[in-house]
Amino acid sequence: MSNVSTVFARSARKIADAVSTRTDARRLLRTVSLDRDALDHPSFRIPYADMMMLAEQAARMTRDADFGLHVGEHVEQHEYGIVGAAVTTSATMGEALRTLERYLPIWTNVGGFRLDVDGPVAHFQWLYRDGSLPEPRHDCEMSFATLMGVNQLATGTRWRPREVWFQHPKPRDTSEHARIFRAPVRFGMPANSLLLDRQLLDFSLTTADANAHASITQAAEQLLAKACGEATIPQSVLSFIRQNLGSGDFDVLAAAQHLGLSRRTLQRKLTEESCSYRELVQQARRELSQYLLLGADRTATETAYALGYSEPSVFHRAFQRWHGMPPGKYRGEAHRD
Image (cartoon, rainbow, N blue to C red):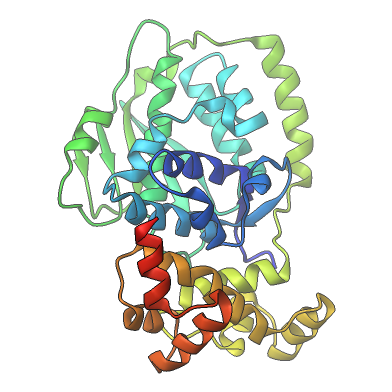
């Protein structure tokens, strides 16, 4: 199960909070089997792909093309628990970035930061290690916009990068990127990276606290040694199904290969958890059906195909069973509310 990247469920709180100011965040959370209480649990973890999927769906639901940027610019370091505390008590900008590089695996095992210094330029890169993740644009931009918030901690300056690199394609409008990063932003690059002046690494932080930093990092070392970040088998299977419903490649064999298991082993493990693969497919379809029908401006037929049905009539019957009314009536009543 080590190939399934996870993150603390509380990471999704910032997404839900941003959505709740404009629409119903509960409906969004239900698409990945989450309720609001789960976002306050100190140790509950979810597949990282679920959080990325939430960000992409939230962007569509709120009609905010720069959703990730807008969420990231308002995130504060303390929201990242012991990792954020270790960063903010660092003595210098360089130490803060090295601290983030070291302790991020406590928070998520999806990837990591890497700081490289090449003469007068420092490259702070974000590396996704999981190649099976969905579209990462909003997640990646959220992370980099959050990093820009560290400039509030630097003594005597509001720093800016030399350049910002993203691997994903260039969006239609980049005015918000220019506003937030205040630097040239390049897309389709070989890495996701902030390019910084080397001298910025020596800037002191106003929140530096040597004694607190020593205590916090000592505790962080213990957590780092124990960090495993595994999701449960049903969580991991549900996440895989959600990501692949639209492509049609979500049968039990494909799921088993994704998890590094044999088909028989996966089915046995699901039986031990008192569920079946068929039940999880139905759960994923049921949870996504309302969002796709109401939050993504799809017709009932388009929703059926997005949920992996080969015949819209089968989806209509399933929706009637789940929600007590056909898709068209459900959508009409929801729009009148």
